[in-house]
Image (tube, rainbow, N blue to C red; front, side, top):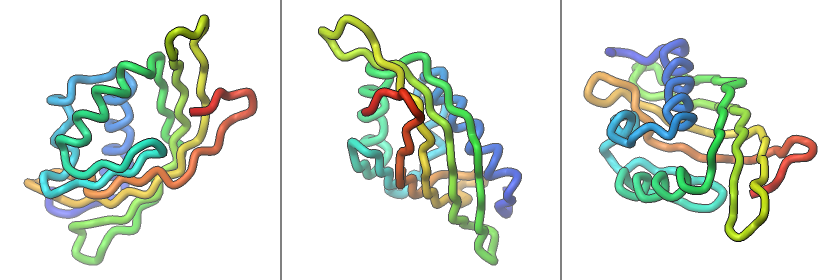
Length: 144
């Protein structure tokens, strides 16, 4: 890929969440994160670098299950040179979680408002910054 397009970024976001939904092995999608010190900010953690993401991911796939991510919005502002973009993403996230010794699991359903920065690295789109700006819980949802 020589230059970013809005369509390619949208498909990249959809594919990213597809990996998360199935709890894909990291090796299948780690190259979607920049090799140059990616930064990720989640409600519960701020991560820097791929190794930090790998550790976080191994933890969350052991907490959340029955995950479904539905991309509702991907709005890109691509730099004039086509090499970087600021992206606003809204994804509906549904997941079940069980915290021992609770009798039942809980269901979380919310819209996650996010800001990403993406770039072209080694001819492909990568995330350089990924920030969860806000979670808006749906009525009746459990909270994190």
